[in-house]
Image (cartoon, rainbow, N blue to C red):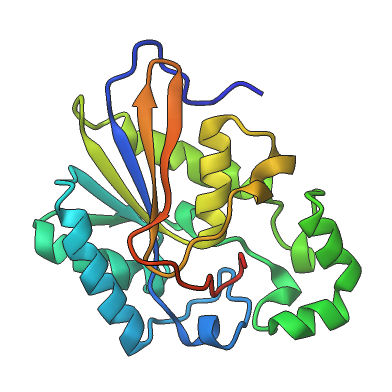
Length: 220
């Protein structure tokens, strides 16, 4: 599969994909998907701390999912950089239909075969929702469109969700969808960095930003 972002020569741009802070449903191991769940006070503190670190990268632009947990996270970076965070529903987390609102154990109990097929890398509409490739179809073009507006050497920060970030990274790197699961999940308020090289985008950092913490969320 050829990367959608192979740019001969490259312009030395950088994309930072930043997951939102902690939510109550993360702590309960409850599948959020596109349900609009706000940050916990700890999640706000995570976003504030991480924003100070990411500000040191001197980003040129911030785009965010329009769900409140991502918007609130992006707001912290906007506050310390003076940039406006633009919100786009295409960056929302995967819609997972009947799975949304269920705990991990409830999903295993009610949808065990479907869950197992998803973990094997098969194309599955979890709970009757979106395929992972459909998430990449909507999110990756938005990320690339904003990256194309960057100056040479510029940095774009994308505030989104664990599953959406993973599928977007897979698409931009040209990895076959069956192998997207090999990209581990992101802890709350951690990020991955894609740098532009002569043959397109490459993964420079993954789940960066803190000492190792558990991955709490839909993608664990």
